[in-house]
Length: 80
Image (cartoon, rainbow, N blue to C red):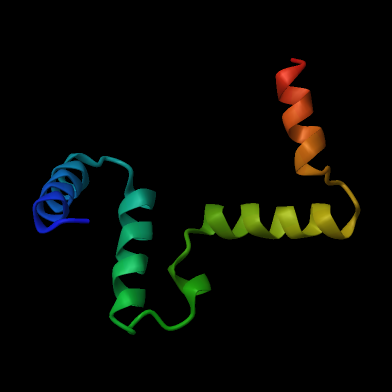
């Protein structure tokens, strides 16, 4: 990425961040920032309660065999 492209992307990201209304996205971005600075500690601590519940639910589904292959998923979408 050229310097010009990098600067344009940075500006677009700043503009986008300033327009955010969703606290969970801002929290996620802050976790990424802290992680890149080596200050994040455990990534789990940076997740919202809703994110944690969803991850644990996905793990439970996997353990119970309630999953499908990505091929089956995409075929299901394509065949509506």
